[in-house]
Image (cartoon, rainbow, N blue to C red; front, top):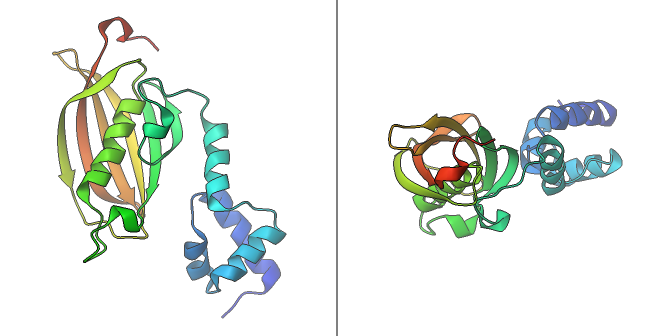
Amino acid sequence: MKLPKVKRQELLKETIEQTPFITDEELAKKFSVSIQTIRLDRMELSIPELRERIKSVASHQWNETVRALPLEDVIGEIVDLELDKRAISILDISQEHVFSRNNIARGHHLFAQANSLAVAVINDELALTAKSELKFTRQVKQGERVVAKAFVEGDNDKGLTIVHVDSFVDNEKVFTGVFYMYRTAEEKGES
């Protein structure tokens, strides 16, 4: 049963406030309406499109700057960052990321998102991956959104900073990695 427009728009607004990274396609499925109806509802409610919501959330949630690499070199879009503690990025899997035969994402894109996030979270001018341990737990398909979450564990006995990265699609883990990061000695321990 379709909801009346006023009720649908009220629920739409609540849904976007709770999950700002939800796509118009996901909203259309949730409310059993067309994508165009969702777009019109968003326009009437003055709710920006997904890309603008991501930028808005990112600018309000973190004000730290990635130091170890240029922001444009990060694979995916960073939406949360606290240097030497945690970071989150999102990557929408599009046609350029998948094998043409089966629309499954190439593993190196998931690795690149996680690895660049592990570099980005390091509070240093130089951060390099010395070693990584990876596990892909399920295939990712075209059209899915990958949310990578990194947290810094600390330094190991060899002086490398350990960063854990888990990647999810709809709260299902699709990738996990432990990255052992080299950084310059004078920056270690600074926050």
